[in-house]
Length: 306
Ligand SMILES: C=C(O[C@@H]1C=C(C(=O)O)C=C[C@H]1O)C(=O)O
Image 1 (cartoon, rainbow, N blue to C red):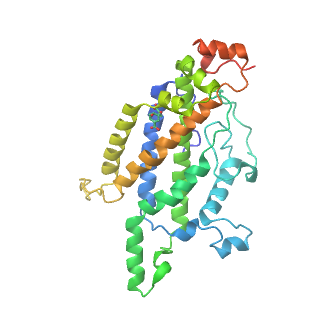
Image 2 (tube, rainbow, N blue to C red):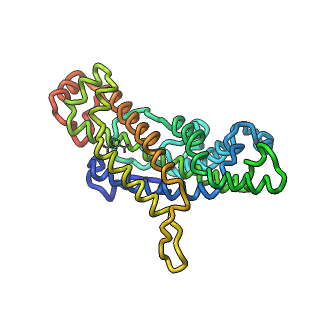
Image 3 (cartoon, protein in one colour):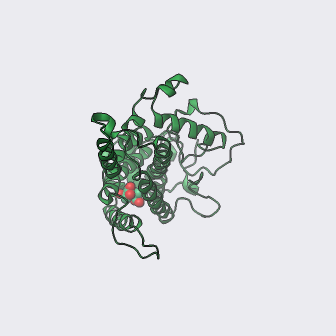
């Protein structure tokens, strides 16, 4: 997983909406392939239950197996200077992460300062809804194998022996979804500077519905879901030894991938867009707000700050 999704040296304008949408499109591939990898392992619900591993309690960690994997992984990433830019957010509380060993990079200030972070919601929907659905086939296979060995009840659904591999992929999926959803801030800033006058009244007199109507592009969403289904059908195919596609989307629940976007990722991205807009005028002078209300675009993509 690239540490810096947006390579500022490669793009002249980080707020070009087509460039941003291209990055969101590329993240579809990352998420689909990671879900294909996760679907190879059973659900193993114990891995998401706090306090379920005595081994973790013995080392003083009382949360879940996955939360332990997140903390250990993100601790190393934090030392390597991850989470110092405005578009990457750890799932582990930032206060529990070590300081970077490298000096931070002075990334250009593209986004307006904000505290929008929906990782708790991403974690919750992923664990409660996405993992059980994506791993359904592997889970049914595991339970049948366990019953054949005389195992009955909850233990049928536990421990395909891959707690570590599955959690490693869970971390990758969660971080990719977090990047994708929080990229809504770049989308929002792009739309705001393109037409600030449209947004200012609904920020001054907070109106989430009006702001959501302004940022929603139904045709973009419709094409995205169409593209996603086609990608999942192709990526999930098995291939014959000579590379001939077998035409069966055997490796993933394609409807589950589409539902992930339709029911969770897109709605949450739009919430991030609206939350970002609602804080977009914080700290600006009345004159700056008046100028924006008259449609004077912000300079270099970010309004002058006081
Ligand atoms: C991300 C955008 O904003 C909204 C959210 C979208 C999404 O999450 O895929 C797509 C279109 C818009 O409704 C955009 O306009 O590209």
